[in-house]
Amino acid sequence: MLNIAIFGCGMIGEIHGECLAALGTPPVLFVDSDRTRAKVLAERYSARESTDPFEAIRSEQIDAIYICTYHDTHAPLAIEAARNGKHIFLEKPMALTEKACYDILAEVRLSDSICMTGFKLHYYSLARKAKSLIQNPIALSAHVLDNR
Image (cartoon, rainbow, N blue to C red; front, side, top):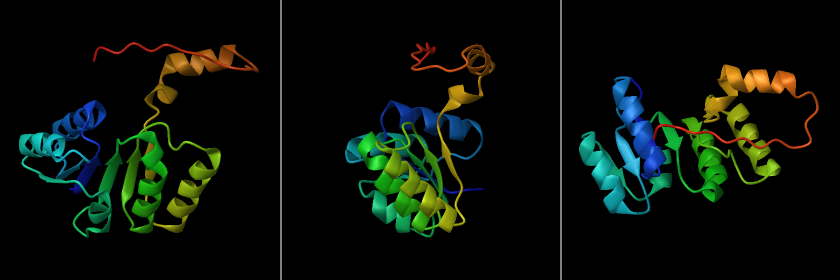
């Protein structure tokens, strides 16, 4: 079983915690700049809480990290996680610039880490159908409704 940490204890971090627990691998650590938010989720899953993501990244007890933080933190956290051999689930957007995306990719390729971004709609059959119908789009705009 993997020891997973979730960075960012807002709505998205909470949803990932629920999903991981339902799969039988509840997170062992919740990290948030607001310790109270981290503590609420940590208590729910009998996990630990922290306010320091880099301490968690350096921890030998953490195998994988879900990065559900503010967008401007994605690249530095993912790069450091890859440098420390952590597997990474990276919420969208991957980073704020194309260069930062390539920087993440370069570090992941140098490591034994697996990195996945949370673009779930990419795999939906309706999204593939739309892509096949729109040959050379200049721009696309979509609205997605979810039951949450």
